[in-house]
Amino acid sequence: MTLIDTRTPNPKSFIKGARGDWEIVIGMEVHAQVTSESKLFSGSSTEFGSPPNANVSFVDAAMPGMLPVINAECVRQAVRTGLGLKAKINKRSIFDRKNYFYPDLPQGYQISQFKDPIVGEGSVFLDMGGDEHIEIGIERLHLEQDAGKSIHDQHPNMSFVDLNRSGVALMEIVSKPDLRNSDEAKAYLSKLRTILRYLGTCDGNMEEGSMRADINVSVRKPGGEFGTRCEIKNVNSIRFAGQAIEFEARRQIDILEDGGKIDQETRLYDPKTGETRSMRSKEEAHDYRYFPDPDLLPLEFDQAFIDELAQHLPELPDDKQARFIKEYGVTPYDAMVLTLERESADYYEAAVKFGGAKRDGKAVANLVNGDIAAFANSQGLSVFETQIKPGQIAGIVDLVAAGTISSKGAKDVLQIIIAEEPEGDPADIVERRGLKQVTDLGAIEAVIDEIIAANPGQVAAVKAKPTVLGWFVGQAMKASGGKANPQALNELLKKKLGIE
Image 1: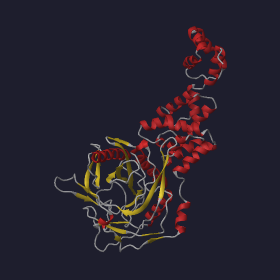
Image 2 (image 1 turned 30 degrees about the vertical axis):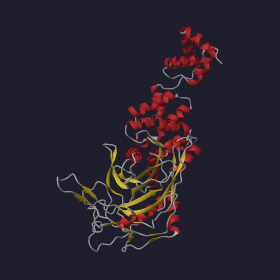
Image 3 (image 1 turned 90 degrees about the horizontal axis):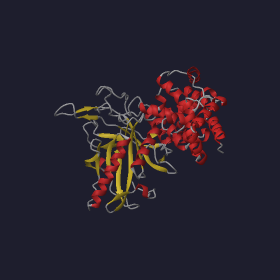
Image 4 (image 1 turned 45 degrees about the vertical axis):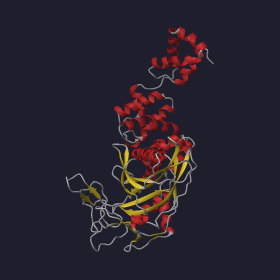
């Protein structure tokens, strides 16, 4: 494959070396486990956490005479993923044998796809903040079977093999070398995981190994020829991906600046030390002796099959984000945060539209992305996993919009729901606890008069420095227990103090 440089060098991404600036070039091969109840070529279960070797058929164990049979659901999931990546769907693809030896690879080869994958070129779009939007090219997506797992810590001088994962369907999503720093790489992994979860084609659970990344890293002088790449294998955390890239880039720069050369190799990242270490020399395609699998016919389907799947795709993150901005008036940042998880986006919309109304989308977003998100983070949850219901959010926003409670009152009601009344109705809480905002001008005026009379020095100061008005506002809010209507309070204060 010929590598093509599609990015203009950006000085913000350069790394300072002893002999000038360097640029990182990053490409990724993400292995995403297909959401399917059975494996790619057998009917064995894909359930996670089963006892060792509980989900193994004769096909998975490579017993003599056992033939693979393609799982149609895995094919559908791969095509749906390709459509979600705005990629070309190949109506004809071929399964190949990729030959290599691992103790946990019973067949002695992996059934994969090489020259003719099921999905061709596509794109993932990243929002890096501000006006920086980046398109990362997808080279291909192909289907392949996973290997088993070698276990080395159960016996002092023997290893064990668990074949539960053997034959599980994977989508290998290969990016073009379009990433230029660790932040972009982390954003790419996060966005890709979000797309897969929206589609329901992979759960994206990196801790359980259902999504993991092989990261190809090289360095070069800005805008120069591509350098020799090293592959960091099986990274199972977005945070670790960023750390691995930072270390590996610096390691390569140090070698090159000392007059050395980079060996093309496969490396592993150790989170405990924050370093990568050599695993083996990097294989090339010819080392695997690919050839078409004689037990599997070419995979063929027609346009009607693709169109049917496309018709039932969910609204994807980019489209949902654009709609939230247009329909609800939220900021691009809020829209991005709200759409990171499909469930969070649904939770937000349920609050906006609760009861058939359409309330201020910005006010709902402020509450969800603000106090509710802070509480959720403190509990290690997503916003939709908290006990706070969309109807309660709608109720709080409605009370603020009606002037019944202030923004501070909204925080108080939310805290009562969290700590004391998880099933509480906001309007009922406000009524019972006397949290209504004071809008009686006479009552507010009495509070103001008392503060002005007690603080002649501040009254004199505000004439020369109008910003001192904030001190009066704070005192009045304190005296009213935070219940005074802020707008009425400000207007009365300005009138009483003679401030325009």
